Image 1 (cartoon, rainbow, N blue to C red):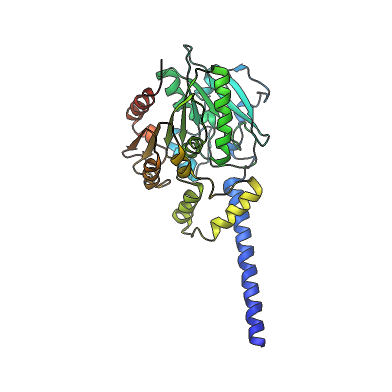
Image 2: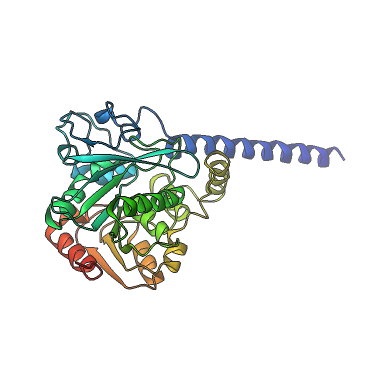
Length: 345
């Protein structure tokens, strides 16, 4: 009898230790990966402290700021990036931009930078930045669309980043509803004849794919996703294995539950793959052929799942998020040719 009682006590202790371990891991993981931390350079915008959140006026600020160089894109996404030097204003900051704001369904004030085309046009791109980045660091993409293609450009800061409010990072899932608001705002400002392209990089690529499964207005003509993942669950499981050699179960379910309680979404529902299956908008898939941060297999799965008009570009010699910089002429030509198929004059 005593033996059974001792076994029961030991099992209870082991169960409690497992529970406490999972709870501790969940808290730590959430704090390190999902929670917004005020001292993170990508979670604040020290460049534009003089801008009021109420302002929609044209701004130009020749200020100094932290910036992520093109070469550091992969490191920024993998969590190894630490900016150490001051750099001149970004391309975006050198333009006569408008500072836009929208309010999310859950009451967050979200911010974006709108750069009107030099020659008035209805063609507009909304660009989604990656994890541990912010809108102003998508300047080279913005410059391509603005100067080479003559588009209006909107660069939103995702919730939890830059000048947008938010205490957590959504990895694209709650953000998809935010982007519906940005699409609506663009249509109201540009007009009902607006022709909108969505272009996202890494987490931004996942974001525009997650948007694609929603009911999009006719103004959204084409989507370009670059280096996006199949789902938050898949990507975090891959990173646990890649970086720490840890199994997804039972760690991720515990973190997902904690995230659901704290942030209102869970990892299993945050699926680009399921959204792409519902997508009806033409989509260009771009991925680095040497990407091991978001495996190339994910790009292939996503491409196969898409039933709309589509194209896949695997950039040779490109690691995660670097297709644009590895062979810029090829990247720009492929993007221009594909989106041009669905844009009117």
